[in-house]
Length: 315
Picture (cartoon, rainbow, N blue to C red):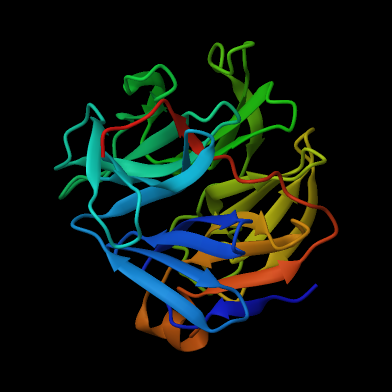
């Protein structure tokens, strides 16, 4: 299977892609570029929307039974927009210090709640395990924010199994993906268990050298329950069985793939975003497509994108 380039104008830090079947549109964010973007693969159409702060993630929104814009995370703000390029309405805040922490990886569950993990980004010094996972719920008519898990420094890899009884969540610097059993309401229970752990970066390793397979970034799940994970600095997307066994390595045209998603008319096109922000001049010379969005056809369909759901709004 071969990757082809969907978006050839690179993003600084492409993230949070999702497929919206109505209209056949692929959406995502450019975190470092402070933009949302959307494209119709194969059409040449590309649209970017400047944001006032770094967008960590976004998802489609549904209100009154119909798709109705998007929900977007801007550092500590949870925003709603009903029109592309229109007004961003704050609907909630993450209880974090936006000077050192921001919203990062996130997506909606089958009930329509928006789950957002954060990342610790101090101005200097190492990242600390002060980031967390929050559930933003608009189903009651009043948007609530609840901290569900914590103890990480860079939350990533959020996804659910097809039966919704297992949640996956990664702490990228620890090279570990955990899985959590969920209760009937969809909340993870307990401390979770290690789903898969990868070898840490060898001391003194530099990009382009062998001996390092990357660390887990964003993820998606297919209809058979396999977990597809982008390996940042590993230049690959892994397909991992529900038992934690690596089924396939799909090497990418960029060293830093960031997040996969499934789309296309049959759900069997795998898209992946990538990064070029902060990468060396030598690396970008060797991998000039870094920051682009790639796609390949795969043998299994992914789970469909779930929208945010809310009870009315006053916009």
